[in-house]
Amino acid sequence: MLRPVPVPWTNVYGLARTLLALGTLGTLAFSGTGTLFRPVATQGDYPVCTGPMRAGVFCLAPENGLTATRWLCVLVLLVVASGWRPRWTALPHAWVSFSVFSGIAIADGGDQVTVVLSSLLALTALGDPRRWHWQTLAEGAAPSRRRAVLLGATGLVLVRVQMSFLYFQSCVAKLPHAEWADGTAMWYWGHSLAFGAPGPLQPLVNPVLASPLGVALLTWVPLVIEIGLAASLLLAQRWRWRLFTAGVLFHLSIAVMMGLWSFALAMIGGLVVLCFPLGSHLHVTLPEAVRGMAGRRGTAVPDLPAGPDDGAKREAEDAKDAKDAEYEREPVRHASSAGPSGRSAPPGTER
Image (cartoon, rainbow, N blue to C red; front, side, top):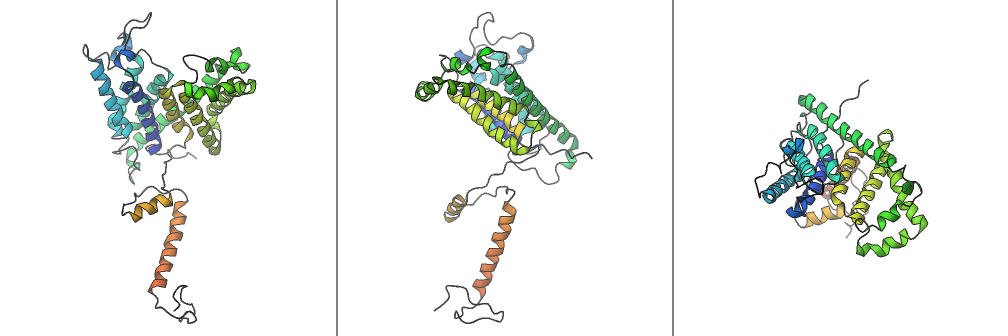
């Protein structure tokens, strides 16, 4: 029996789009034009506008217009990250991602991952009928868009397959090198002037690098995480949650240690699609203390989607409130008196 195709338009894939856009936005906003576009040995001046790279937005910019074009791309990415009209911003997002990867002189693996993922997620976003990619799809909207649902779900499946192969290749490609096999690779990376730990973290990192066990763990644990994420599509969901947590911590560690924040955001965006169930919706429930404070201050508490156990809790709370209201309607009696039903007055009504 065929399983129904899950509706792809949830805030989970929206979160992935936002993370991808923020990674590219950070590169453009916090790097100067002279840093992004400069001569590179054997390559010439950037942007290099030959072959397919001529389609990049920076190759279409007028002379001395790279700075203005850069900030225009930042504005586009801000709109994408906000989640507004995903079907309108899908192709501009993919175009800006391609332009950055092909047009700047300091492109890294995160920019390449963003190009691929933003292009695949465009298949999903182009059919998204919502105003914001954080919203819940209106009831009855999916059946009338069967082809768009199928195309959108296909885009998410392709992202998951791409991420699985990416982690598999990343792990397997390291194994033939002796430094990764014998557990010493991170000693060299940790002492690198370009990718070593920043000054404030060196007192914490250097003792680990000085320990044979510490270096071995720093080298081999990432390999275990990568091969686990490569196989995550074959594992139960509970293991995917654990691998997702490990993967996020892994990439955040790379960002803190090596400064590769755009790479970390791109990979975490891909992890969201890889590890979350297809068609799932990320629910946010405010803590009771926060909701109580908002109520006391007269602030309206937002009506957020309920979690899986919130329905039963809410029914129990409604039943308790109804019972309390029934007590309040009863006349005040002496503690020893009882009504026709034989029930005594509630505690606290004694005189």
